[in-house]
Image 1 (cartoon, rainbow, N blue to C red):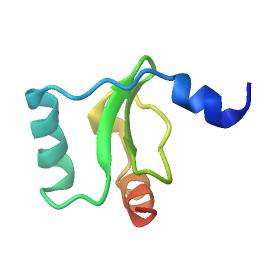
Image 2 (cartoon, rainbow, N blue to C red; image 1 turned 90 degrees about the vertical axis):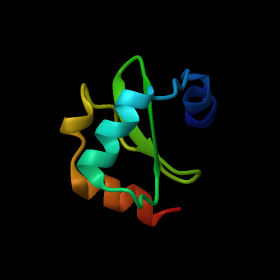
Image 3 (tube, helix red, strand yellow; image 1 turned 45 degrees about the horizontal axis):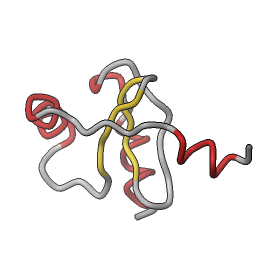
Length: 72
């Protein structure tokens, strides 16, 4: 299976309202990327890039959010 099909096969789960509030509190209101979770944890993404999964929202580095946001 190529990397594209493998990435598409991962089940994306939307964040709960409480998790969205955590993202806003940590990274602010104006974000250039979206956040979701999968079996590996939480991640940020755009249509062009995705960070790796982290166990909690607080573990996602600001640098990763900035980089992924810059690809959108």
